Length: 80
Length: 156
Image 1: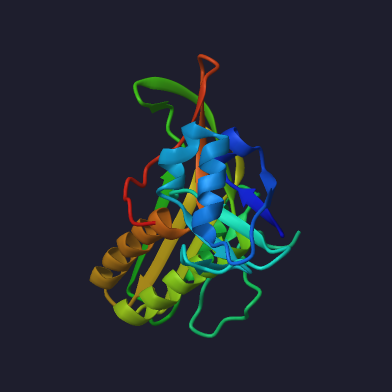
Image 2: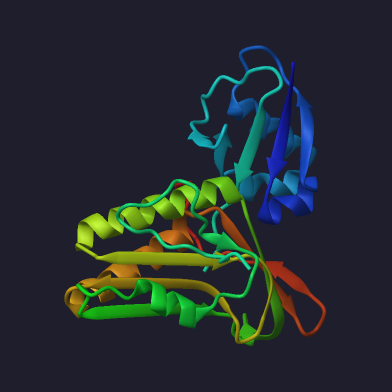
């Protein structure tokens, strides 16, 4: 199944504004992080400090993804 | 023109906006925060300064995950109003390109006595900087640029 990834801030340097990923049934956010990290090794440090959101709510890393869902990856804030 | 900002008031509509792409109008905000019950009003403005990391800054750009930033800021203001017994609280964060000397974020608090306004204001800006999904990119005069990283915590 496929999921859409939207990224912000420094992650745009690695993944533009987003990517589409092919994942397996019963995959969680953890598998998504691994795929992204394998794709861009330099993103590992930031990815380890990110929050994740689906449908405008934060989700845990064990959140079970559904086909066609859009995951927003939120790096540490730097507003203000 | 429609107001590019709105405040959190104890009774507030759900469609209010805390993120704006327009310059922040401090005079209007000061008018808006005024309340006959308030003996103290505090205004904090987070300004774009001309230096960072020992380099000269040309300008900043901010981006936000707007729907969640709106939700989070609204919640922070709501909690501040309740915790500090405020009469009003306002927070507006600007996104897009912001020049030196312009305001990137404004927080205004109004309470019966000054102590609560000071404390709540600090509480609000600290939480907004830490929790709201908003990101800063610094553009330096030497042509380089860097994403901001003022939040160093590891628990996100």
